[in-house]
Length: 407
Image 1 (cartoon, rainbow, N blue to C red):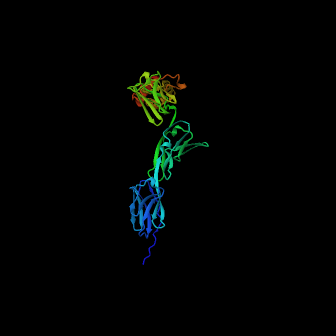
Image 2: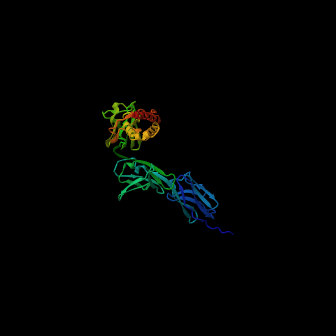
Image 3: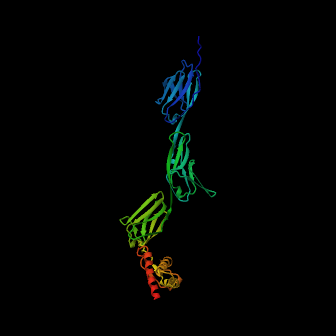
């Protein structure tokens, strides 16, 4: 004959952790249940949820299943309020029970009321941005710049410090510069997806600053020219181009005014078409915002049109006094040799090729200052002068002069 025993729990109820919105199952394992009943109770509210295979609560997300020794409490689409202790109870005398814990993880949420919004501050001031978030587990706050640049952490001991990411509820910048301007992301994460972030714009205001790449610009009359000014300003300034006579220049067929913006940096350009005499002179670029005004100056001057280089012709000169001196010094030798004409011709050719044929110069030596000369017409470039034929002609003249001296 079998003796019945009271029901007992086989094992402890495993604790369950689920993200919000998921389904959860709490398992209670009981043996020797026989005619006893198992009930599930929510401890913090003392709410009876199920008895045996029946659901007592009106919450349609709750149901119970039995599989041999296991009595399972199912909660679908878990909510944050479902977190807490649950009791599995057997209606013995006295009643026995055990507890299991349901932990509900909640993804982070930015608390807008206590988080900084877009902030405007003047340069060289200090700023503190705050980001607060809720969630379970408690979210970790991380700051980073949207453009991927390092965050300025200030200067300490003469050194500047920066970091790609900063952790904590507050982001403090002790001395703000224009380089700190931009979008900052406050990111809250706790391991439960999705993480969340908020975008906070930090605008740093400062007076306009202008740099002129070329203060002197030259161009020829009738050509086109472009003048350029590079400026930095925040808030965005009003800009203009003004001529030396005080006239503000506008976009038209004569002037093409453009601006290239990159954050607080602006590249101002004006293109002037078909320059005339009245276009040359001074121009200024002007930038003005709520904190001040700045001007940059450019001088546009005229470049004369290029002229063609004159063709340089070299003239060759023969110095006749030297020729006569040479003939006189060699006259005794020439009389002894025969035939005289051949000797004179050979010497004259050698003399011309080695001594007397050279380019004329504007700067003559002292030994040539009083020496009369007769230029030969033509030059090597023009093809009007031939050294060989010229030498032969001189040789013939020398022969005739020699014959006349003998008479």
